Image (cartoon, rainbow, N blue to C red; front, side, top):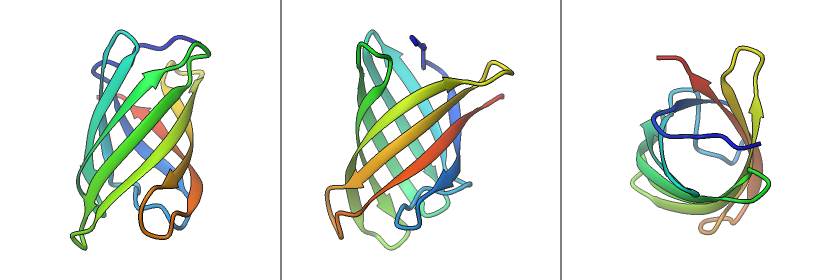
Amino acid sequence: MRIHYDNRAFRSISNTETGEVGRDTIFKYHQDGDVVWAEYSGGEIVRGSLIAKVRPDGSLDMRYQHINRSGELMTGTCTSIPELLPDGRIRLHETWQWTCGDHSSGESAVEEMFE
């Protein structure tokens, strides 16, 4: 599935306990060709950014970094698989792992917000 992410906003709907992104975290996506990037903040996240490459199957191979409310710099990797919802919005099913701290992994989901 090919999706164009430019100018789309997403909000977290679920996350594993060791994740820091929550319901108040908003992601603002951009895209140029197969390169996708986003800025995010809210909730426990002061400021974050991610960069991803769109794979041939439409999934995103992603790296992320942010500073949390405790002042820690956090980094990780993520694979996001898009799902087109019946109302036309996009849900991203994510499998992630920290590359710092406890190196734990988890699953999360974000959904597109209509603005």
